[in-house]
Image (cartoon, rainbow, N blue to C red; front, side):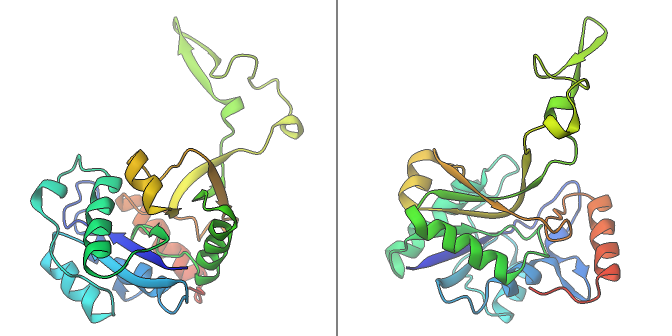
Length: 232
């Protein structure tokens, strides 16, 4: 089985300028993700798709493949991950080799472990269903409320705070750390969330950290300080 790992890393970021190159624990944020995918046997290549020359330079220095700078029409704020990923996949399969799976590793999730990636690949090998990294919801959706005519009512009909915690079903949210799908399904759905979606449950809250804002970055710095040794 051949898995192509993709790291999509634009140079622009409105909420956290220059986030992919911000130093976390002494190394650029994107390097954490590239290193997490290195040495995993089923991963045939780690391809970084970026429109930024400095990101490209640093990615190459640590061993990632950066065959081109991403076209401007695929580097806009409104460009979706799937669109940029399909562009990279089409190039790779035309120029290098066909692959069995496309693994999206976002650089905003620096603390994912090699062992977690390997577990996700093993799940994928069972039947080729799309796999997505999830964490347990901090706030359960059945306890969520909404405004209706100025009053708070349960967001989900028949639910609400009267539902006991022990009666709540397991609830998850996509943490952004891991997406794995077949090339065929990625192209047909234009999404990393396939028709049948299996969870890669990530229980460690630090591993599930997703950095999109200055506050997120400070939390990641604090997490790194508290946990001096992170196995990746």
